[in-house]
View 1 (cartoon, one colour):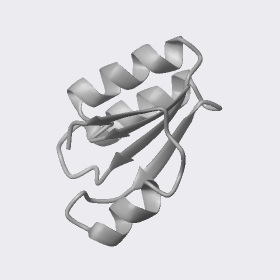
View 2 (tube, rainbow, N blue to C red):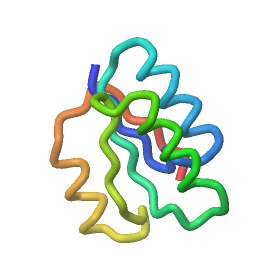
View 3 (cartoon, one colour):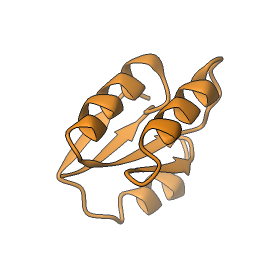
View 4 (cartoon, rainbow, N blue to C red):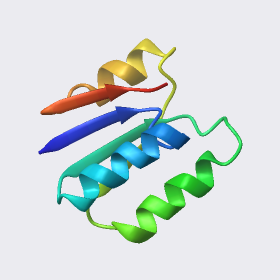
Length: 81
């Protein structure tokens, strides 16, 4: 399954990502890393699942960035941003 998580480096988002990555899903994390600790959460995911997680730096307030990330095909989308 291909999963997109906006805000995927936050507390809830990275735990949802960890769940899906643990199942073998491909996960794209879309986050601007503006909150304290999000860079560490992202690094944790990347260390645990280096081939399954993709990071896209962006902000949901930027229409072009959102449109760009949504150009991919996803089976499930979570919005935590």
